[in-house]
Image (tube, rainbow over all chains, first blue to last red; front, side, top):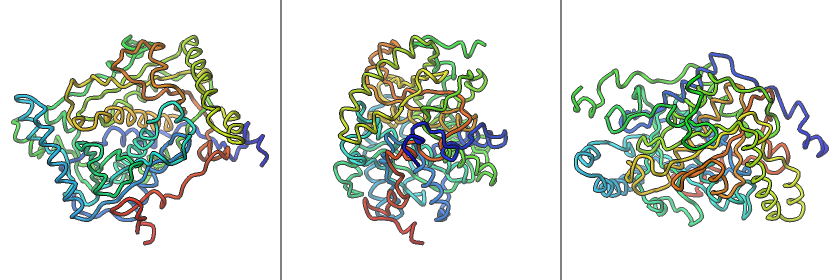
Length: 239
Length: 239
């Protein structure tokens, strides 16, 4: 195919029709988005079938990435000794975290269970190879951190596909950035973006668990949308 | 409800059943993930109906957020003069970017169209309020940037819901981090995470556009998965 036809992108094989989904399919996408939860307590011990795990990882790998750099890698963690080491590091950091809250808030914090590292049958350490794609990556020339953002998009794809498979995911972030590097043998150019606990669930909270446990509340959508400028509010909620 | 029942999370109203989706619904979720594209050229001028835009923003707002901080805000941009200013800044940064590539690669870079700022009927500046949730946010005690990651999860939710609605999204990242702050009146504690071009499409590339245009290629899934340690490869692809 001559380069010109690629540049005008007129080849119908390259640009198949892509209209809206039918209502049933559209609702399924919204249902995955709305019923997805951050899971800590509800993991079942059932192992995840290889075929299902391959589908979830393929969904993650289909995420958008800056300059098509696909900077993510997924380390599958099943060894109890490794999970134990990670849980131990978490425990130390979480004790530090508890001291940062005051009074009743500190007590409430200590009562929360914030991870399922050892109860989830699978953990995944999601990392970003910051050298992938070479020294100059298209779209990453002026903001160095968009490779980390691409990796987060992969996490969210994984999470939503998992919801559709009846698999819960919990993201554990209470680590110092370099805490997990020695555990997984990460070279200096590879950053941990997310540590995920993954397993089948048959129940999920109907609303965010931190809301159910009265730690916080969801904000009205209208509070986070504005027209044209920061802080202007939006007519979208007055029409 | 007494606090104890919240802590054991045994209330069935709080924990409704949440198994796998049926096959049709599951396939819809995977279809959104797999057929989502970064759009630059295919925007139609049709405005997006308010009811649809509210659904897309609600999907974004349903994203996971660290400590339920919901740090995102969405600035809806429709004024041609504002788009023109943003396009002008992009043009300057993109010219700088082109000089970072060498030889044929620089020529190829200059031939790519990397944004649809002025052709998309809607632009959205997605920002993260780094002060939201107060000085100590649950889950953000040891990694300061997880609020930015929450905001990226919101972007990916928006993108996938948009795919199901027949709406294309393009993420423009070729700006210096502070370039857009004066355009939208952002205070110093609010960071731009993504600048999105949004509009109806009736065709999308069948594979990533940068692959179709021979800028790069998708990596095999097996290359980005490993067992237990960095760089170990995974038995998941040998079973």
